[in-house]
Amino acid sequence: MRKFIFTILLVCVAVAASAQGVKVMNLWPKKAPNNNGDPRDTAKVWIYLPEAKKATGRAIVICPGGGYSGLAMSHEGHEWGKFFQNNGIAAFVLKYRMPHGRPEVPISDAEETIRMVRRNASTWHIKSNEIGIMGSSAGGHLASTIATQSTNQAKPNFQILFYPVITMMQGYTHQGSHDNFMGKGSKREEKKYSSDQQVTRTTPRAWIALSDDDTTVEPANGANYYIELYRHDVPASLHVYPDGGHGWGSNLGFKYHIEMIMELKAWLDSF
Image 1 (cartoon, rainbow, N blue to C red):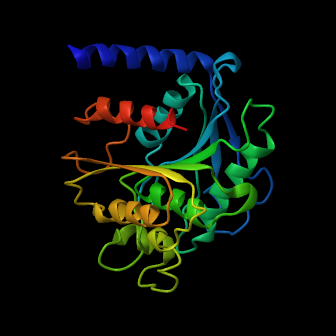
Image 2: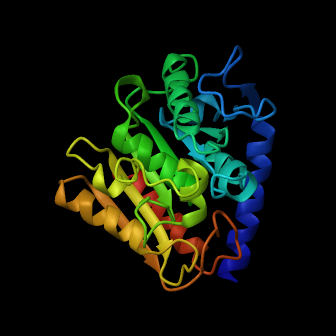
Image 3: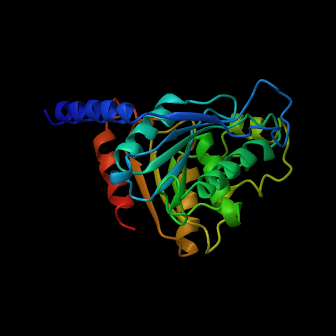
């Protein structure tokens, strides 16, 4: 009965969010930097703005996963956009370009999205110091890379990571993400793009969720990242669910979906 009621509530949420509308825009209206060799691959942003009277002033840029070879735009992107919109948080779902061995391609897309949000903060009822980044799987790697390495107007204020790829080091990395991001067989700059090795005391606070039985991206990725955040006195919250595997995102079929949503909302309300 509890799950049935919660499902009905989520349907109402989706209907309400749909009524509020969504806008889509090209991230680079002119020529995009860092050509990845595919002229058909363009970066786009879907904008989910809450009603002005419900706006909390907070915003989040969402990076879906897909192993840096594609994007799970629905359950790791748009459905989360509706969720945050309904909770008064402006959401920006990013279709970033695939790297094809050039890390700077998706990184430049994510950084420009954060800068774009800050440029329009007053118009969209957003506080410029309340802008976060979220990512799932390989999107979690992109989000954590931005959180640990980006600066100035491209630096987020908080991060949310679902079953993230964190390291590019052999043994723990997700090999497909590694090869697509850096180039197959490439070991150059593996440490640079291993987010657990880039944490500093200025890294933004984090919420991390994953499953203990994830055989796609080893749980050690997210766990090691949490440990480094702890070591550097960065506020962080780690949630390891007993099972669920990889890639559950916003799916209602995930056994711990209700608990996960409650824990995420509690964390967002904590600061």
